[in-house]
Image (tube, rainbow, N blue to C red; front, side, top):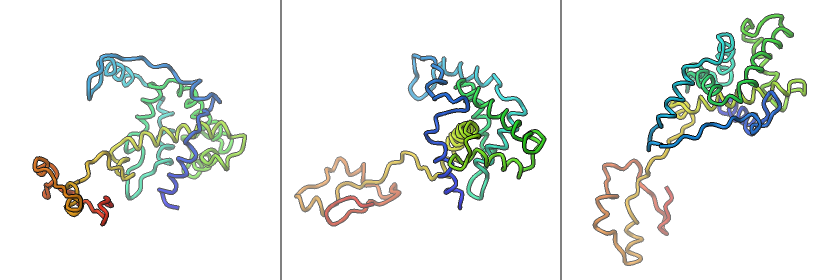
Length: 234
């Protein structure tokens, strides 16, 4: 199974999994944000800038928790020949910011990270950060696959779903993430006007004033293709 297929499975397990470790629906843990006014087109308001600066100045995760996150996000989004790992793209920093931006996530996130130590002690007699890579994977496998997990681990599954969502959200909001997905963004296609054969058929012509706009061969990235009936096909 290649990485892209694995990603599909990861998203399948996470999309729509609104229940967090606490068992609360998202609407129950959501915190009403401030309403800002005086927006600046294309930029941030002064209130938004001040709020961002305040959140960035605060620290939520401990060093021990951040070490756990570094381990987990690189299991969810490891490096390969096509793209960097989650830690290389500073996904843990993104999750740190989200904990402060969306405080309703703090309790379930911290509870899940605490659970890792409990499970590590139960299975291996040591803390999660002291586990070997194989031992870490054994614990992750208990909660990473919702359809395979037992009822006893349902809370852990909900927590890992949240972590997976955050990891992928952070990863795919970076330039490297966009490139990996092949996301091109909004780009103008090339159009050179109505085909001449279609115009001739209807006794029409391209207005002279528009020729300089769409008839620029040197700027074409792709030449439009039309079928015999004048339909754009590529």
